[in-house]
Amino acid sequence: MKISYLGGLTPQQFLQRHWQKKPLLVRNAFPAFRDLLKREQLFDLACRDDVQSRLVLQKRGAWEVSHGPFTSRDFRGRPNSKWTLLVQGVNHVLPQAQRLLLQFSFIPYARLDDLMISYAPPGGGVGAHFDSYDVFLLQGSGRRLWQISKQKDLRLVAGVPLKILKNFKPEQEWVLGMGDMLYLPPHCAHNGVALDGCMTCSIGFRAPSAQELAAQFLIYLQDHLDIRGVYRDPGLTLQQHPAQISDAMLRQATQMLGHIHWGKQDVELFLGRFLSEPKPHVIFQRPSRPLSGKNFYRKCNAQGLYLDLKSQMLFCHDVIFMNGEAFRPGRRAFASLSQLADGRELKPHTDFDQETRVLLYQWYQAGYIKMGCMT
Image (tube, rainbow, N blue to C red; front, side):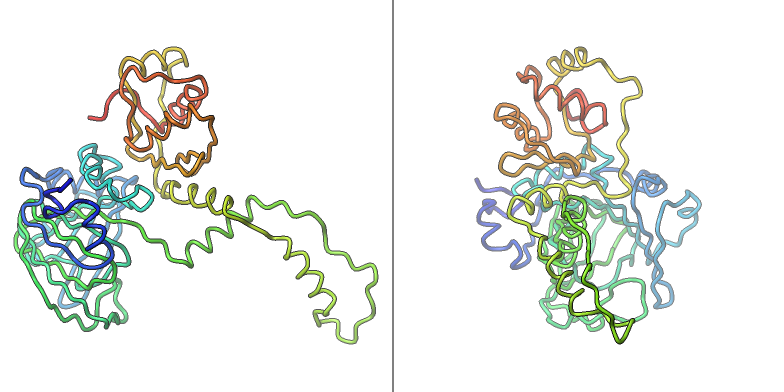
């Protein structure tokens, strides 16, 4: 099915022609789009300690970056030019932001990072740069000039707190207004400058580096390996140099480490846990007065249930992953839970088997799911 916000392309056509390949500009991608929140509400979010935010200031040609949480005084009397506020993970606190993300569900949730909203007065921006991930830039109120380049020179300016391109040479440029959207693949050099006071939504997709995956996988193995034995040397002989590591010790250590093995299933369990693990600042709010299991099931049947905005739920083969935990339910439970993972909600009068009920109640108590319908 062709989708207007993909420029009349079907999701499959977009993936084949543009995803990780080339930019796409869509005028009036979301004709009815309006800012998800007011400027002052964005400032309030930046003052919360459970929300990540940054303030970027360009002053006399120099760049400054400060990190939240901020106070209301940080925004009072601020000059009307050359600064930008960026607030990450707005989809964790605003249902309307989560609903916007669902428009992009043709990209797997395992690749989704978050929805960031930025505000900048005229002249504000974060400098010419490139990202290592895919991003959809949806313009809210105001206008922003976007310049892009396919340049191979990605050297950065030294000694600044931002990754600013040293030799940015724009090849194309457009002014985006309310509802316009620009998709950029990884390593596409770009520069955005506010022409008016403007809000921009950035829908970003994570792309972990091989180094990050390897480091986290080794941590996972450390927590899950069970290698028996201890170093022994009953035949130890006198060494001429006491500081020397002997060949015998090297051989035995090599043999012991050779017992470290992993396979496809280990990678599956690691990846599901890693990709669904909440970021360090995320805190789930447990119900202050939790319902009994019986009352919980009764309300779910009457009202439905949905994932908390902060929850990340994935599945692979017969394993369900919820916020960094792995579960291997039976076939019937897996069918219900994978439906919840895909749609992020279950409608009223959904029939749950006993295993599903137990897991849902456990997640309700942890604050991972809520009763009712997504607003």
